[in-house]
Amino acid sequence: MILVFFLCGQARAVSTSATAAVLMDVDSGRILYEQNADKKMLIASTTKLLTALVALRDGNLDDIVTVGGDAAGTEGSSMYLKAGEQLTLETLLYGLLLCSGNDAAVAIADHIAGGVDAFAQRMNDLAQEIGMENSHFTNPHGLDHTENGDHYSTARDMALLAAAAANNETLLRIASTRTITIGGRTMTNHNKLLNTFSGCLGLKTGYTIAAGRTLVTCAQRNGQRLVAVTLQDGNDWADHQALYEYGFSTYSDRQGIAVGEIAGTLPVIGGSRGTVPLVAADSFSWPVAQGENFSSEISLDQDLHAPLSAGDQVGEMIFTWNGTEIGRVGLLCGQSVAPEVASALGTLHLSIEK
Image: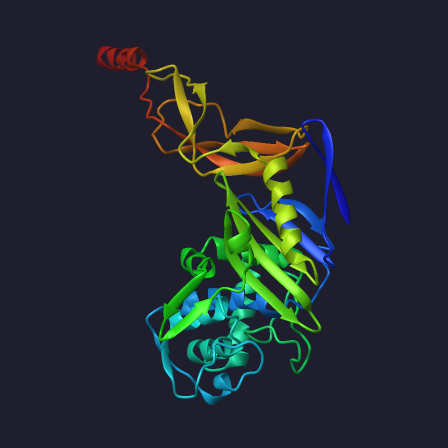
């Protein structure tokens, strides 16, 4: 698939060799490029991003894990665990994400949930929470030959997983490590983009004969974070670089509002002051390309009447992109506004006369 875009008046194009691909802005969730985004596919060891998220949620980095025989005997890529060996969960996570250790994945599953099947259920539960509606997991490592063949995801779902991983500080720290010596082992990251593309933050490589080459990465430039996913792609390193160059150059302009930022100053009826600033209760950010139409408007629940208290929600800011609503942020009173003083004294005077 070739996507043509315009930048500074010149037509340019980006394409991939992948069967399925997605480029997504992390903070907004906006899809910037997609190709067979909802096709269910094998994902190989990129599965391990979800394994790591479950482990970080349900375990502790300093947990001591005793390696079982089933873990030590797992085939495929390995950190070379031995049955009976004891390591911290943190060491296993490095082995999982840097060495792509299938043995580490099983050891983690045994420790966290007592076995692969129970751990897979936790994976599926978390996947649903993330919004991965077209995915199903049966193991923590991504090997193809599961008993029922029911282990798959999509490029769109994997982009959601990548964003969740990028927002996990511990996972991102591990996945972006180039090399480390820990637990008596020296491990080197398989992700070549860490060395070849400035701003790459990790995340995970994958390969099996049936799945082909799979790659999920994250990169940052000028504060903007993007995630890229390619499935069944023989030219994945170059494709990810091309996707990032396209995304960062085309969608460098961001529109929206930051939490606490003043959205506007509106009139107050019957107040000791005539206006009140309204501030955003949350942040909203949307990447915009040249020629796209982004707008925002303030919608109040009702006219603003004093008294008002700082922090009261009185309306929303509504954002639209090319005519479609894309988000809302609550608006709060930035200051308290008492009733008009003269009006209050007049009421008191009438009360005394009565």
